[in-house]
Length: 163
Image (cartoon, rainbow, N blue to C red; front, side):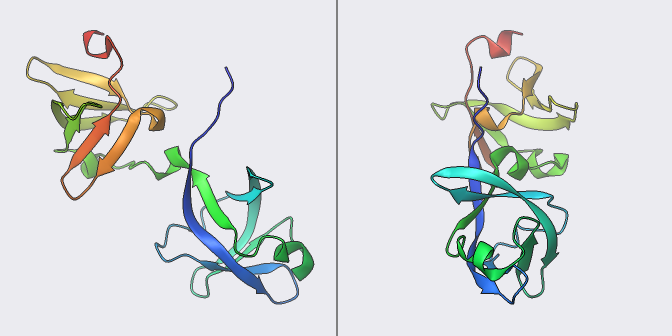
């Protein structure tokens, strides 16, 4: 099976800055942080990873190791900046506790009561009408996360509640 990640745009490159390959970015959601080691840029219709060598959040300037002059960087002016969707998933239990879990047909499955952070396989603890169950917390199964209405719409696979 070939892994094909889903991407989320978190900003875009506005223009080059200076003579060393720096780029001025739009980071209006403050989604880009100094801790990010790689970001994805679109190149020939594909999302390509670029290693971040430096980031200035105050000036919204970013430097990738692959760009050492304005000519290299200019090719990516007006290009989106992406991350893999899983990296945008909430990681703190308190963010989801109390949210309603809905299936793909908007039927309530239960209430999220907790989070089990198992490396490579995070789980949601959900209280249904009958019992508490653990469900995989995987970006491929999350259809919508609605903070305003405190709901998580989830692709409920056949037999998942019977495990």
